Length: 193
Image 1: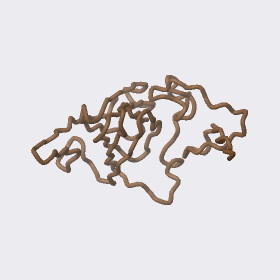
Image 2: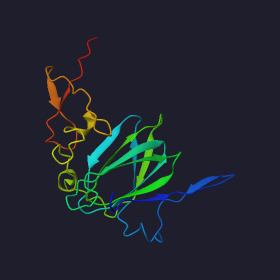
Image 3: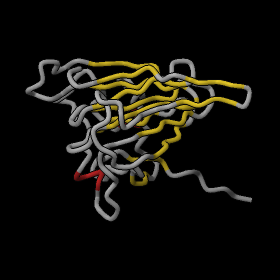
Image 4: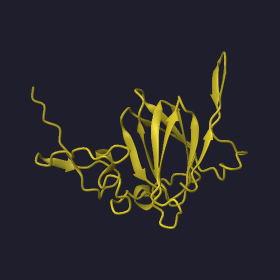
């Protein structure tokens, strides 16, 4: 995908432990601007997908566990429109992946332990704003027909749909940040003692 860059990360071990450099200010090809740094924990088998950013560039590195990071180029003017990149990133393959703006991305934890993904985006999170509606857009079926045309939690990382929850037992509203997604979850059964 045009604009996607990768950098193998070097692990520097000694008798006390190890150091893993992720991103440096003198990485001329990768570093442009500092926005913030955060860690996202993902439990085994969980998918965190699909979204893109209008203004920021993401720099992802998985520092514990393993994730399958998938990028989809749906930019109409891009020479790589429709391309899909898959990266296996983590403890067994330390790598930084730079995701340009307007490229859909998401990952699935494929390790038996929790994966920790560090992101160094070029823009800070804007507290108090509805970022998930202004900055992120859910992936629409018509713009990426190979991916699941519905709620991301109902699909695996490549979009193979799982059976949706039954809707005939007192549905509750979906708890995802995209309030307009329309999916419902079942209420837990009442416990009687």
